[in-house]
Length: 153
Image (cartoon, rainbow, N blue to C red; front, side, top):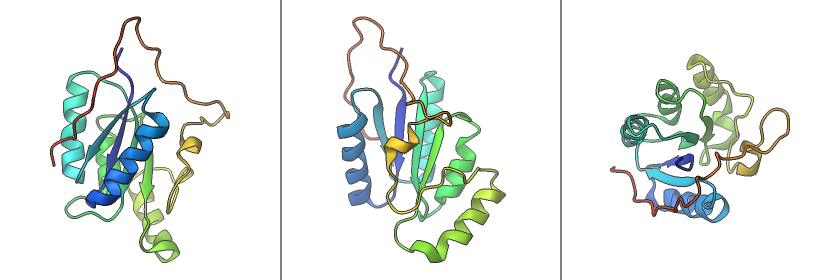
């Protein structure tokens, strides 16, 4: 069985690379880390991953991106991976944007109980509501890790 995927989405390549490096350093042994430089590229990547029947554990998206916003991406991604955890990053505009972001999430039908603003502690994202750490699916004997290439932009 393939390792579950963590997909990071941000149009700022420097931020995206920093997030991907952090995810790989902390979670790369248990999860495959993928990236996309736009909401549409992320949706295309998810469609390809879904076609290969690979599991997705986490979708981590910036809010402010050209074309498709983070909220719109998270909403549309539910059609492909309804059970994946979702994290929305809103780092530049702080508290002034919280009501707008919460309204957008609510309108999209995305719960805000796990909304993290600024820089989330991703360890908290991997804990379920009962306080148990979410474990990735067990690796098959002899399964090897794959190097991950960036998703098309």
